[in-house]
Length: 291
View (cartoon, helix red, strand yellow):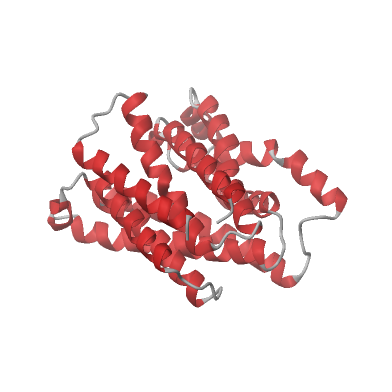
C-alpha cells in the first residue's frame, strides 16, 4: 500500500476514535443525537459539495450511481439502528468485538470475491492479527461474556452489525473506485438521506427533541465535523488505489487509538490484555501495510 494511502487510513483512525469519544458523552440522547449530527454534517460540508457539483466533477448522474448512493445511505442507517438495538438487549463486550471483528473480515472476503482483489500471505496474516487484536482490546481476555444469558443475542446482533459494516464498506468502495464518485459527495448524500429518514422523529415532537439536545449541541457539532471526515479519508484512500482487502482491517486500528484515548483522557483502566491487543493490532497493521 502506498505511504499516502496508509497515512490517510491512520489519520482516519485518530479522527474516528475522536468522534466516538464525543458521541459516547451523548449516548443517552439516542436517535435524536444521530439526527442532530447528521444535520450538522449536511450543513458544514455543503460548500465543499456545491463546489464539486459546480465543477461537474466527482459524481456520475446515472441510475447506477444514484442507486449505489441510496443503497449506501440505507445500509449506513440500518447499521446505526442495528448497533443501537444490539446494545439495548445484549452486552457491549459481546456485540462490539464481534461487530468490529467480523466487519473487516467480511469486507476483505467481499474484496476477494466481488472486487477481484488478490490476497497475499502478509495480507491474510495481518488481517487475522487485526481481528485478534480487536478481540483482545474489547474483551480483555474474558471470553465468558459469550456464554452469559444474553451472550447468544449479542452474537446474533454482533454478526448482523458486522455484516452491515462489511456491506457498506464493499458498496462504498465500489462506488468510489468503479463508479468514480467523489468520497465527499458519497458521504454527504448518504448523510442527507439519513437526515430525511430520521426527520419524522423530530417532527413528531419538536419540543421533546429540543429538550433532549439541551447541553449536547457542541458534541453534535464535533461529531458532525469529524464523523464524515474520518470516513471521507478512508474512501479517499480507496479511490487513490488502495485495495479494500487492506484498508478495511487497517481502519480498525481506531480501536487501539480509542483504548489509548480512554486511558489518557477518560482515565480508564487499561489492563495487560488490552496492551497485548494493541501490540497484536500494531503488528497486524504493519503486515497489512507491507502487503
